[in-house]
Image (cartoon, rainbow, N blue to C red; front, side, top):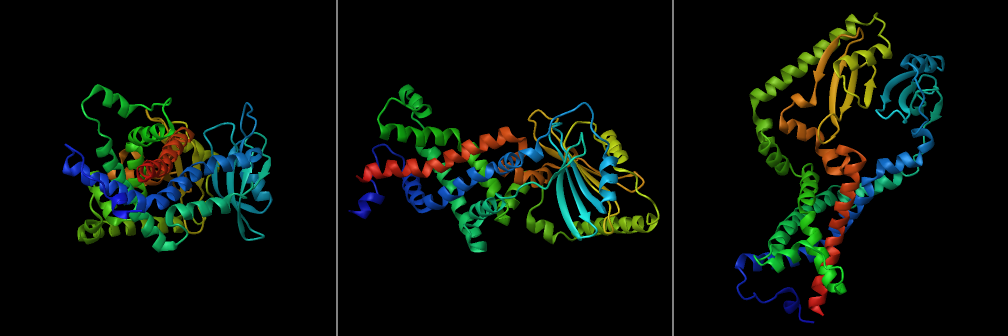
Length: 396
């Protein structure tokens, strides 16, 4: 078999040099990267439904029958206190048919445990089943580094960059000439045709329709791997580059001063409030609702020896996309508001930094966006396969 003939084709009549070179690179890089891209896309598909699968596995603990009125949070405070347990955090879901999740420190065993509780009856539903945790940890490691540590992380990063080039060069090759028949062909799949024609249409048409999403998923994926990608994204959104943030003495000085000021305030609060009994969780929930009046899943972290404040995160979905945007506020033990860090008030680059992970995984809008991302990554998984079939037919 002539390798040169397989990997090099003649330039077509009236084909531009740019399109010819794009086609060759698309082929070469596609053959080189296909295996890694298959693994990354497949594991991305699988990992997308991690939370949904865990919820289904623990459905007897997660989902409960709704009733007219929930118990006050003080009920759980008293219940756990009687059992010599101290609450560290409590998660109150927006959905009334889901249970409350409480993490607590067991004073006798010195262990931290997390249990589901029925918010209507107060029943302790247990800690749930984590049988799939090991499986999803392996899937995540495969997705990030092929189970090869830092070396694998760099390999994945390089091939995701190659995949981005493949998507863009694929757009160049797909771009139809200005003929009605060719334009229609570029946007549709001829299902009644023979296998190779359907395969060709699947590669080209699905590749085009998923292009923007696959590019976005790829960019957010390598955002963490490469500082220069992070710099490009942050600068394009109005922030500073990583090097500027590091080298800017004024910025570092201000950040350090702000950090020290915040630390001193907290230390003073620890001293001032040693003898002060912290207000109950019901009061904190009431104050939170006054500050953040929209409905949303709320997580309350309670004060302890190191942290003198209540820290509350509430997920705001009251926007036209229904995206899950985190707002954070702090109260001291007396219930005085100490910090309000609302997502809407942050600059665009800071917003992106906070949402880069859910934007990459598809969790940004809950189950609907997870399903969408699953379908998109499934298409990404199919592209190396359909592309290989196209090339193999020409080889034969």
